[in-house]
Length: 490
Picture: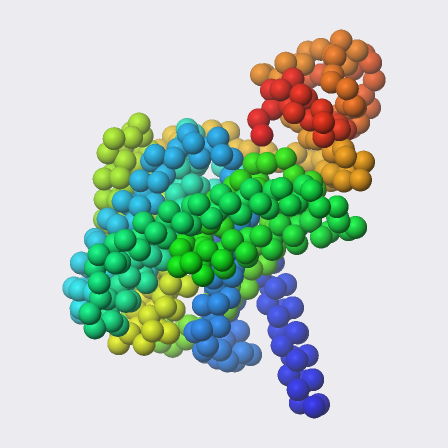
């Protein structure tokens, strides 16, 4: 009994230390211009048996489980933040990259893997499928504060949120071809349309169900609403997966519908899931770092093969995928060059690399180590230079400046009212008017105005200026009228 308690205490202590270390490393990643995932992985490797020897971990099944759970939470948080208007504006190029782009990347890398790794053609295509998708978290962690011009940032965001299901489908399909004696090719092809089609349909269903449930239920504690929303993310993934469809696609679609709807305690839901997604991301990458053994990873054989495959992925496969997928798009050559360089690899390839390990594929240990090396080099080389690349190509505007003020937005559930945050710009109809001149809808009250770093107390003669942040108390029945009046998008 005493040994069990000591073991539990040690586990809790190590979890706390890893989380604290993971959070602190995000500060260094921002300053160094390196994706946080690299530092999280290094923390795991350092704590592992080949590092300080604090934790011995080699459980691929548990890693896969935690990895999938983390991906669900990360995709859910990303979907909540994605505007449907943004998706519509870049749907064609983004979806082309998420489907045709993944296929082209898989094919080019497969040929290289066949020659460099000395594996069979099917194992080569399996390797290509594993590294076929990009990582949204890594891209936008590096681009934080940068204002990428045009629709480039939106295209990367939507592509990264929708290309994971394609990579998962291809990986599972090639594993099936390697492990099943007489696989049915028509069944595999039909499975693709089933997975994507049903995943999309169930995502819409769960998104609408979650929105209606959140708004209609009256919970005693506001802290339960974010948990309730997160439960629908897990439901969307698990039930969709039970029908052999794409659970990841369902989660992303459901999250977009939830995030673009009028919600009770919307701000709390967003902030809770943002923090929880960060926690899962830290946990996932630290565990992935624990799973790999540096003594096996940093050998001349793995390093040489990894560098060659990374070079082919970065300089040949990704550019070929971008230029072929966007041949009929409005993007010019500079845009396509940037999209090619911004195709970072991250969480999904490493999680997918555990699938062959569990399936018992002959060369799976080598595939896992080389995939791990490819992800590290991609994140380090591309991740540390994306901002510089965008600036050199002239694709960035002025750096985004976060407001210095901090005011928690709330949804007053029992009073059926909310506090809205509205930033005044050139297109805001009330710009230049005094409050006494403005005819607001009923049940609307401006509580505070943030002007620069100053708090302005609103009164009748106060004139609305460009850049003002307005905090407006509004009843839900008048919220849509207020948005139309202020020209605010959902």
